[in-house]
Image 1 (tube, helix red, strand yellow):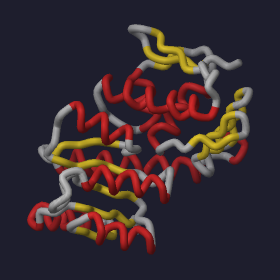
Image 2 (cartoon, helix red, strand yellow):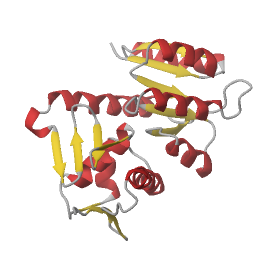
Image 3 (tube, helix red, strand yellow):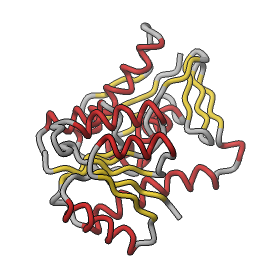
Image 4 (cartoon, helix red, strand yellow):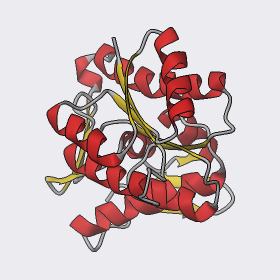
Length: 229
């Protein structure tokens, strides 16, 4: 049974989401604030975390929690579920490592579909033939089993969504992948600006390891392309 953590300070909303997810067969733990959630996460990580941004007296407590979770795991799926719908907050959430960003007006079927898509990616990994699970492109190595990417033998700490976007581009070097292609590969459904934010974050992580990294090309009006060295 998949374990989902919900971090939401409004009791009615927290219990409502918990009830819906439990009805779908998930094991759900709910927390009202960042300290109680971190105490639990330090003991055992969930399989997926759903986080609000404002948590009790911490206006940006969810951002802090997301950053801390990423320090514990680079592959744990994280979804922001919040009333804050500004582009600034969305970009901040993604830059901190969230895999998805939803507002609280999202329908329950939509939320359940996004959760299922994140879990489905993990299941696809375990069912893939072993020979397909290691991809080598020059100094780039992608290990699908471990959801790990390395460049020049140095690990690149990517989120689950970022991992599948890199995988989508690198498995066919020189081919242009549209934003729609990247969404389908990463099992996310977002607007073009969100995909752009993910790609910028990916580039930044590679550049932190190699200041000369330039393998991700933007093909204006079409999408992105991985250029092998």
